[in-house]
Image (cartoon, rainbow, N blue to C red; front, side):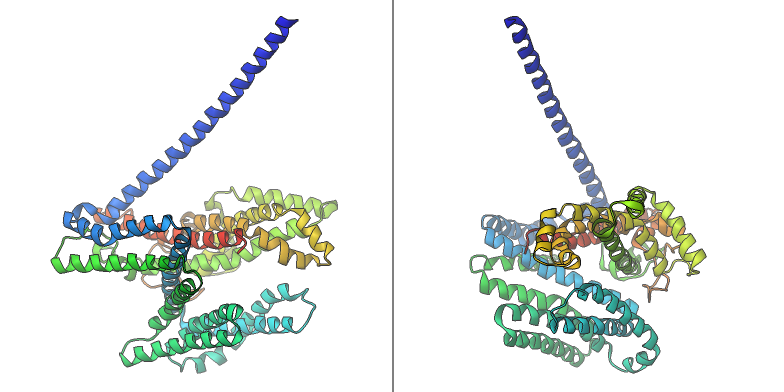
Length: 539
């Protein structure tokens, strides 16, 4: 008996060791696969970057100049900030305010300029009045059951009114200068936002003064630009979208965070080092990298004959407009469908069977090849609805259908992750289903929902096959002027340029445009990640 017990113990010990060894081998294989994937991506990015920037053409003095003015100061400041959490947090906020505001300003100006500031102002003005009335009514009543659903409906009603009254309103508005439209579209919302944020911390009077200061600053910038003889539109947008948020973050950090206030210096060290290095290189005639990532690439139209003159500005604006309108179409529908399937759909009977069938099909649609969605877009928008080929609506709608299953599935998973105890507790306090959904469930599900948004945007911005199927042009020489105008996207131009007979296009312009596309994708994803992390921390 003792021998049998000893044998059983040895067998159990051997099995445990084998299971432990299998777990360790599995863990090692996962780490190895991850490292191989990361290494492959780094090699790919390095290859693209070398072709795009061509650092080998630069003089060694160029590297020394930027090392002394940019790399060394930034490295020293980063090491200092990492040792002090308060400084690191303030530094992150300052970087987000400076570069996020600058990017937002440039994108807003480019998109509004291509779509016509007068048209954008008309639709935004009429679309903002109904929800403002709904919110005003919401403050005067205790019954807020229908406030949430009424806001998107009121926006749609406002857009419909704008479409009906467009011909009557467009003429009188067209008399005003363009900068006035940008002032109304950018400066006024910035002033209202600053007034609200300041009022929530320092009272309504101080908030009103802060908002008035922002509006007065925008007017001062416009008048100074007019006196200087330049168009005031871009300065007004840069002031409202970049200077105002940067000033607010710097002022608040310096005033409320004495331990981390030095962190606001970070972005200015980067900007100052870059400008100082550029001035030294220019002043001493030092050889720069022979890069194709130049202002011509970002600000000019396409030139298929001379690589140095090739620009992708219309393609950049087209990608932003198409992806932005795609988000407007797909995200409300996808999130609404997920909310219905998780919170309102019956779990039994014919309704439950139908909901289960829909969920199975939606999950299957998430894995359908993108070229199939191109055929669906061709049949729906071109054959059925009769839209023109290659227009913004068709491209955005096709990409919206492509990402819709991803948005629905990710939002469903986010809603399922919210504990039922929170719902039951809200019901126990007397809240309705909509109030529970709005105040309890959705705030908890926002991080997961934004994760799906990141995945959807990353897939949509790089797609080419659906756009080729619906006959989107590979090359255009002007940005889209409206939702029913012709447009193209940056991936299509990269695809077309890769077949150019000249090597400087294939090994210079294409990598540089690919870097621009990667930067666009990373910036959009970074914005969604910042919002997700903010809600994830409960701030």
